[in-house]
Length: 171
Image 1: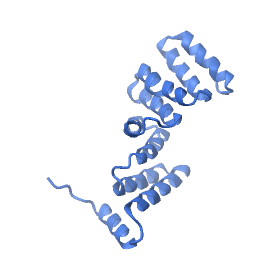
Image 2 (image 1 turned 180 degrees about the vertical axis):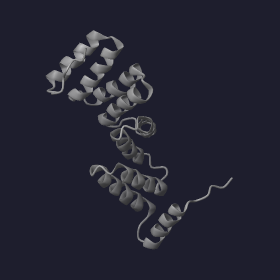
Image 3 (image 1 turned 60 degrees about the horizontal axis):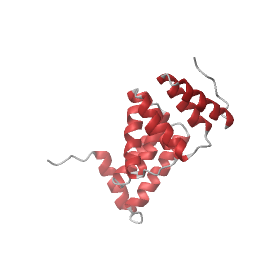
Image 4 (image 1 turned 30 degrees about the vertical axis):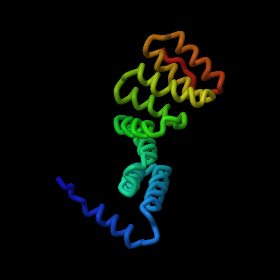
């Protein structure tokens, strides 16, 4: 069964072909950069549109999924955030700490699975950057929700020692 190609995709293909001097990779980089610029300005829907164009140019480029994830997390679209993070870390398991922190947030908000948010998110972030108090604080909150007060207090103390300023121990 053949897929229909939308008018927007045909226009995009025509633009790429008419430019002549740019490869698909070049266009993907251009669209990703435009998406990043929109994201910095808070124009999240525009950013997603540019990332979609980049993905059309380079369907196998899983790094673009990291850009999608960042925007989806920022807009609190947790299911989409988690989907893109999981796709990203499948191909880049040695990713930076922040993507794993976002994974913890996305798991917590999309599935409510606190244990998984600790194990696959916050603890992985801490393993990559043990000097970020926000990671310890968030994991402490998750431990607290599970009723693990000792682990929670330990993480809150570590966050405070690292200078994390928003340390408030919720009851």
